Amino acid sequence: MRDIRERIERIVEVLDEKKGEEIEVFDLHDSDYIAKEVVMVSSLGGRHTQALLDHLKETLKPEGEEFISTDESDEWIVVDLGDIIIHIMTPQYRRRYDIEHFLQEIARKGAK
Image (cartoon, rainbow, N blue to C red; front, side, top):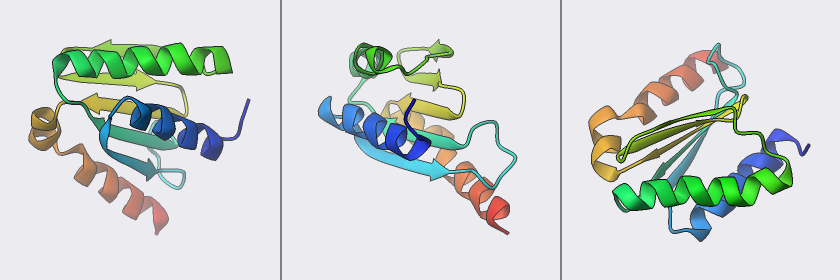
């Protein structure tokens, strides 16, 4: 298994290949959060949200990535890879829930 940095880079590359937008990575190694890294990506809409998940699975499973669980809706999909969590959201949901500020705060507190 590759180290977490290489895995994150690959996840970002795969999301970018399928036109994922506003990809952000949050390093939470120094916090008490449930994952060490969180990747957030905006989809172009409901079908694209699912297409991004499908592309991640099709590409990363053969490379050894284990998808522990997914929580899926048309607007927001959460992917649990154990030490990495991926949020695939429509832009409307991303604005509404504003998880970035929550994750930035956790990262900031953990870095102290």
